[in-house]
Image 1 (cartoon, one colour):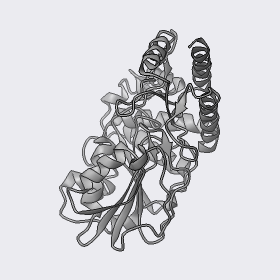
Image 2 (image 1 turned 60 degrees about the vertical axis):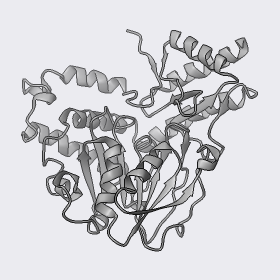
Image 3 (image 1 turned 45 degrees about the vertical axis):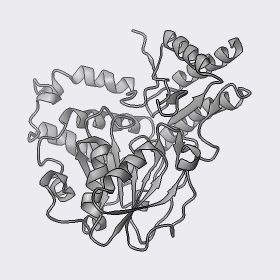
Image 4 (image 1 turned 180 degrees about the vertical axis):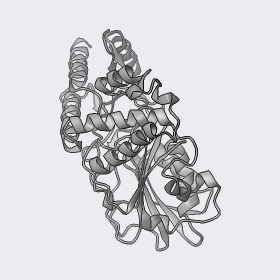
Length: 360
């Protein structure tokens, strides 16, 4: 079977090796006579999957011992609410940096729970850049500073994070976690929906520093209190066991590729090829993101007209390219080139783009 050139923004491409392994283990996981989906979440067989996934995340991201690793549900969108519920304590202000739609949604949720402040924004230029922020840029009574590390719609990404010494930095890394080396110690919390770089949809990873957990509100609904999940090792209720199993297979795959540094090098090669194709097109293709803010995960670009864009997308579909439609809010096209997207797929797209430009 011919595999599609999968450039979906999410749920997105999974490594073929991971899919093949999951297929082989689907109906009889390690001699249990059951699928992972059928195992009790209290069984020793599932517990091994659960613990290994946590261990591999700690190893790959070099997560220090004073951080908790949680497997949650509800996607990053639920975290937009849980974060202010837990950490926007009375008398404090939550600071947000707006770089796109998802950071805007996170702010809107925080507004429901307390005082917020936008300390920087790139909305003035259609979120085409990452604003400059330093470690002094926060409210005097800041509970935390929230950023979205990568912006799937607009194709922008933080190249260098602000360093805060007295305020926790919280990052939504749903679309670029594990895409490059990251110093976890810069953050009070990192969270990510799995469906881009970690696995299929259904599980959300949260990495939270112990000192931040100590500052949280009390008397919260049980399932919305991070302490509930810390105390139960993310097993308070039935977790999304199959999604966590798939996440564990993806982490195995990352290790086999040489770890995060090797993945980062490959991602930069893929992004460089696409941006070079765009920049050398004499204006036929134009990247939405400005230099210095360009994402290595999502390449958003436009063509000279809506008519040409429709033609491009129609011909791309005929040739097996999937997911190249730009988000409805900015139009154009978008290639999501997450960790599992092979370099060969990006090569094929670049060749198609060059041929289309020559013909049109």
